[in-house]
Image (tube, rainbow, N blue to C red; front, side, top):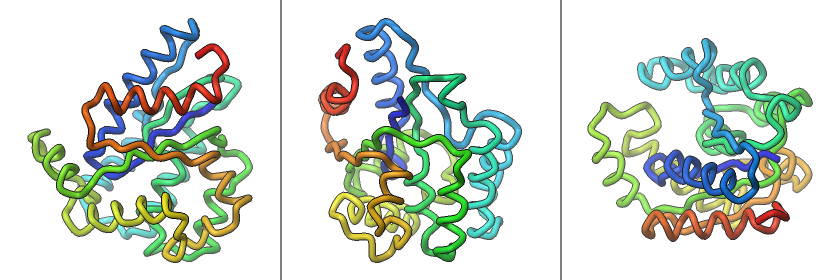
Length: 210
């Protein structure tokens, strides 16, 4: 099973994913490792460099992420249960504006890519996201700048509302399910323990041991 934690930068994805991993391991008595997207391998390093430098063509980012997932994302055989901080939906949200439909669908629907069981989107208003990012005390990446952050936040909320006008690759239910699995939303403006509890409650419907 692959659980994906999605949401705009500053919504708390990494923290929630780590907490969920520990909670699931404690309750199911089996590993639930967190997977980074981009990865921490060589191809992931290329993606992270591109995110930091901001001078890479936005369309090239789609190829970089696709290559990293093909090379580095763990297969179901090697890692049966996993939690990923970001995955396919992030590419749709952040890259749809600059990427033709045919290219986006072709790269994301590659049969070699692992498919998520469910995607949980952490819904968080722009002000809270910006405050959390500022508290990190580091330089922002290309998608953490105000205009990019606002656009991403709007697109995540559009996904939750079933509005795919700006993201045509998600319009077909079959493709949407392939890229995201079941989509759920959690209010991430609340205290961490409440967010983790809400995410765990969603996971409970998919994991009998919970």
